[in-house]
Length: 402
Image 1 (cartoon, rainbow, N blue to C red):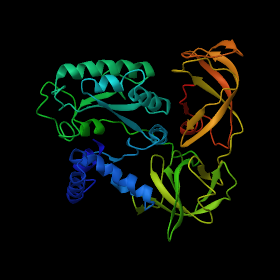
Image 2: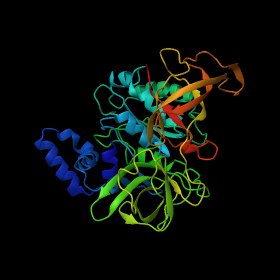
Image 3: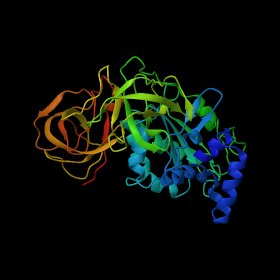
Image 4: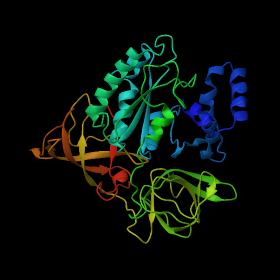
């Protein structure tokens, strides 16, 4: 579906799709031609060639979109969190087929987990794409649209998404076929009953978020590449502040020396500066790929540089966990682009989720549905920030069912 959208918006020229079509057909996978658009990147990454992020850009009448992450990665959820922690909006693609939707949306399915992570990581705007509406079990039926909208809508509302129509940031539900292209770029003639926007118009209905440009720089690294003839190139999204060539940057955690930014690139083009929301690669002098890595945070060495957190207090909400959580529990925390095991050293208090008032001091245990303030100690060096100062670095998700 994503591949189809990029293709239709001119992000890839027709010759490339025809080449993919031919390659896919030769491998007996002709129905996968659009998926191949995104898999091209995967193969390139595995071979360690340049990072072709340009493929992931497409333009509508109103906005330029960067597609950060699509499924198909081996450690998908982890990558999904890295991608989601850098996104402004989420498109949740659900399989509308009979049985397909039910499986994906079951208690153990991925759909709920993805939506929960998106909300936890600060995404407020969502488009739900009901895919495969061309399938014979769906056959473009309004009844299926209503069923899925009602069930997914109810769950999204329980997480905290706005589902009341007419309100800002309201979730949009769009029935599509990523295969036939129905309702992607223009309204489909096969669903006369559907009065909402096609996917491209739904994207244009989104509200551009306010960017924290005035704050000091924070840029969590998504990857660090070594590119022949250029050197070390960290890649990530500017969360706050600005990144410019000539600036001295500091990386936390770790012992890397402060270093000068030689150049900043977006979509293969050199830029004089990058601000919040921009996905960039930047070249740094004198550092190797062993000095800095994914999960580190770049900041302005001269203006409130980022630091390692030895411990921190956090509010946690237990959405789903089979047992009881006590002091000493050590799950992996996904915070911005880092994935690090952290110990719940002390459960300080249990609080009311809605009011924030204390319900119990020093509880022995917490369980599903509880909200608590916990002192957390990372097992490896980690950079986090106060949520008020730097929201993207002050949120985390824990995926653990042990």
